[in-house]
Length: 115
Length: 112
Image 1 (cartoon, rainbow over the protein chains, first blue to last red):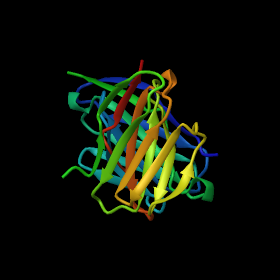
Image 2: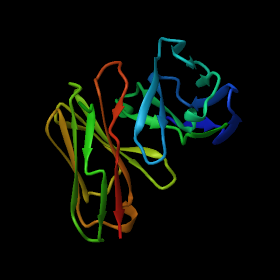
Image 3: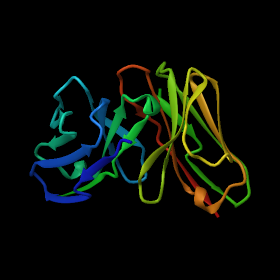
Image 4: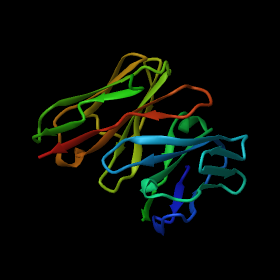
């Protein structure tokens, strides 16, 4: 059974610092991995999607890496801004038949960027 | 032109009542989902429909019944609501192969 863990659970940084968020998963038979952002009381916004054959994806200040063999993904946010404050969720879509289509979520990392 | 839309956004109801949440997607995706986010903010899948066919049915009380009239709509009906049903329910959609999920903005259900 796939389990997804995110470390740290919470993170507070001053504006301008780079953010490093970690995600680990127990079963490397994944289809893809997706990073989301959730603002308080809001829905989930997709940030980056990495297919299992890819090593990384980039969008603006965001970069996500994937090391399938070690079961890890890292989300880097460069030059953080107060507007980056949110909860960041990692979700894995597994290949196994009984998990087909299902996203397994981590518990999230709550980020606060102070001005 | 919202991609995945849910109604209502907020729902406050008494124990024992029956309520429904509606979801529609205009992305042309063939698979739709219901996820529940509990008070600890953990997201867990409840149901999934692919082209109107139920393909994932997690261990969910049978008071919860999903219905998909067509591949663009997935509704969730809940009978005999209990206090423990209070949560945020998210609808999502995806294409079968390769692509990511798109989530709706959620329905915050409060049972009093």
